Image (cartoon, rainbow, N blue to C red; front, side):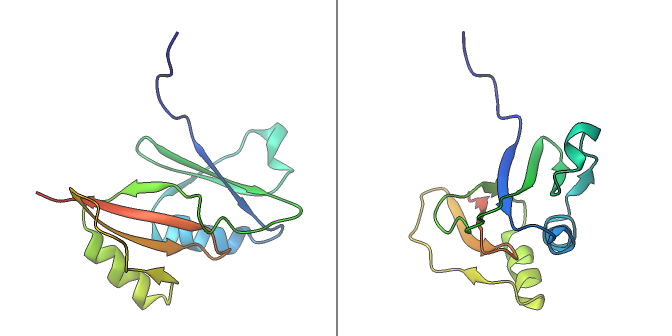
Length: 122
């Protein structure tokens, strides 16, 4: 028996904020929204995919943003993402301790959840 891979990452969001989630995950991160199964669609939220990366935004009644726990997404042009985030006034933390083999920044979705963007160096 062994774990094969991640299926998806679930990130909490407040109720009724799907448009803001779409602007960040589909707009800024350029992920495609994928339909939720009919039996889950009534719960709110939204699902996104880009290649093998799948993120589920799910409504949490007593929502509190995840400021520490986070997904880390590998990107091919970190500087382009940083510039895009700055242009859209996305909250960012670019002062990350060095991590050998990577450049990285933390950005925060519209709900305050941390998302790490990483680019391999060398």
